[in-house]
Length: 158
Image (cartoon, rainbow, N blue to C red):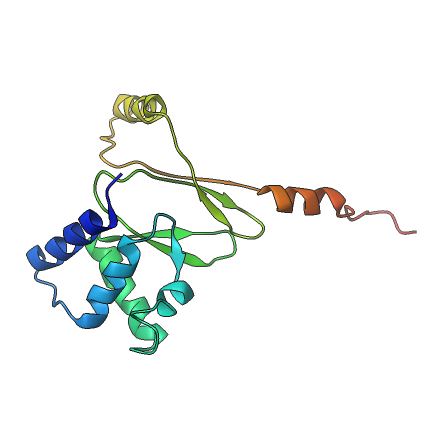
């Protein structure tokens, strides 16, 4: 796992090599994402200390999508159709558990043996698994409790 400073250095160097113009807003977005271990929403990025009030959400979204297209940022979708963003630094393990009901996200630490097995399975099918990012969808503990207490709809009329 890289430090935020290493992650930021990688992102800025990537932008320099890709000849992307380094604006203060772009650098602020990368700085914020470099400090995050979990994916964050557009709203969270917009409200961060160095970005809040400097530009509108549309500019931030377009910048994040430009970073995504370049491979600097990873887009993580949720069942609620909310997009989350994460710096895509090489060597970082990016595996997450995502709740289908509330969208909460936690880091999933997979054993190296699991990642190796997936690489072997991919290779056996003719794929080179250069990157592995896993998103496992389920229900967090509070949402499991809510679901258990909900009454299932009945097809019978009372």
